[in-house]
Image (cartoon, rainbow, N blue to C red; front, side, top):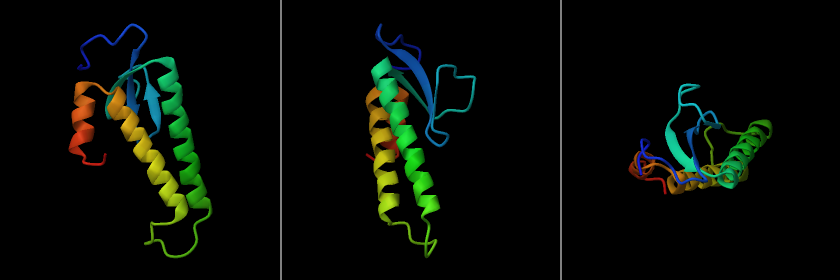
Amino acid sequence: MDELQTPEPDRKTYYVSVGAGQVLEDPEAAAFEFAIHANEAELDKLQELFAETQDADEDEALSFKGNPMVSDTPDNATYDALLMDIYRMLHELGTYETKRHIESMNIL
């Protein structure tokens, strides 16, 4: 399914910026990397994952100690796992182009 195809009746098209942690309905509102088709429950779960990722990132920044070149701390592992959950969900809900893009990243 590509961006021009209509999503299933209970789903809407959303535009996602992973770096900004944003899910938008308007593709003109801000830059985005991925387009998805999601229902309300899926949208809520994705937004929850973004909130958890932001919390984990803030926790890592606030608890920073030691060598800035070391990135394998437990807090960083939590952030990485949440980010992988986001990409898995984006792949599952994504348009054809979104799925291909994520697959080309070789992260799943």
